[in-house]
Length: 82
Image 1 (cartoon, rainbow, N blue to C red):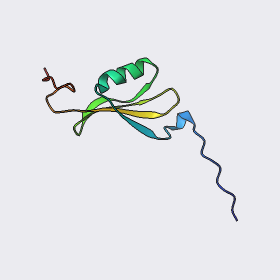
Image 2 (cartoon, rainbow, N blue to C red):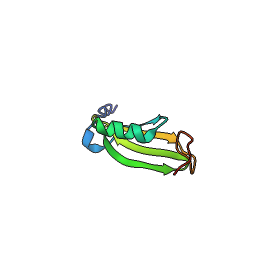
Image 3 (tube, helix red, strand yellow):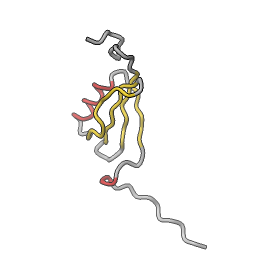
Image 4 (cartoon, helix red, strand yellow):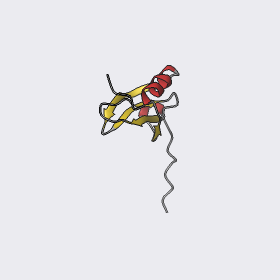
């Protein structure tokens, strides 16, 4: 019988162990707040397939997606885009 493989060990400089999607009302504000608190941007905020989406790494190396629904030509709170 072969020995069991060694357990996986997280190493921050090798990337994320997983990604968590957090849906929020104002993803741009949450992204700025997270970066201000020490997160590292992995992907800047952008419009993608009907979503407003950005990605960050927290100081522990975990990747987070920050997203909110986006309607073309509208702000996330329903106001018309200028």
